[in-house]
Image (tube, rainbow, N blue to C red; front, side, top):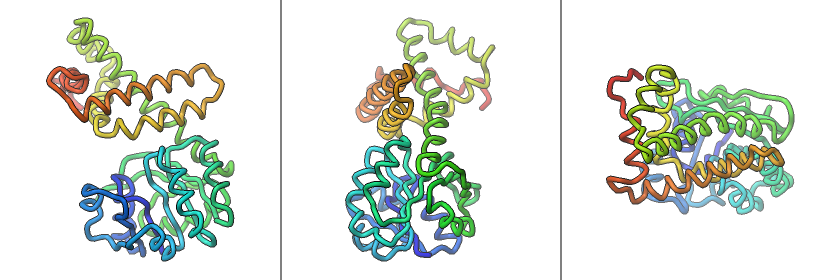
Length: 277
């Protein structure tokens, strides 16, 4: 099975490398990508364009920021007939069903990725798969991919991803927002001490997740919006629209940080001094 990975971002490149190192026939393309992607993908087999890559492949794994998922499917639709297409993006069930409708004549699988990019010596993330072509992805297990089939058709894997990310990235948003609020009010040291005394596990989690979020916040904006869409008429959907705005502000702040920026304040708050992580 020839496997195309689009695109070589942090997750996509890591999955492509896992497949390549475990003996799979895999390729990427750098069309439209920047120097960071080229660096991550250096040494991987590559095709000149998305069209060339899809024409070569039997299976296409779409691994992108969620805001780019539909656009990619529309661009690739003319080349995907007779192929297997797996949308692996953090999108709502409604969005993934819309993507599936945009690629008629294609064997479609819905995948939700839970966990960080695989490392050479680690187990890697879990890829939960649902939909009519989910069974066709089982050969990925032979190449180091932790693929887990779930029932429920197209949208089920995306629902799992939305629910899980709503918890984990939601906690990161809440923790960072309250740390900024406490800092603004002059209560940062007291809040940090109280978390260390009464909620040490929460503090350790935030000390890992908040700094790790800074460079990813721009990608999490669309994901929070997708979670809000997933929740639909529930009043809690507005919480995630607020989190999208929070991550938008942090992403802009990270791009032009100053000593008194929100990012700098969060770095100072979530210092690791004296707290074992």
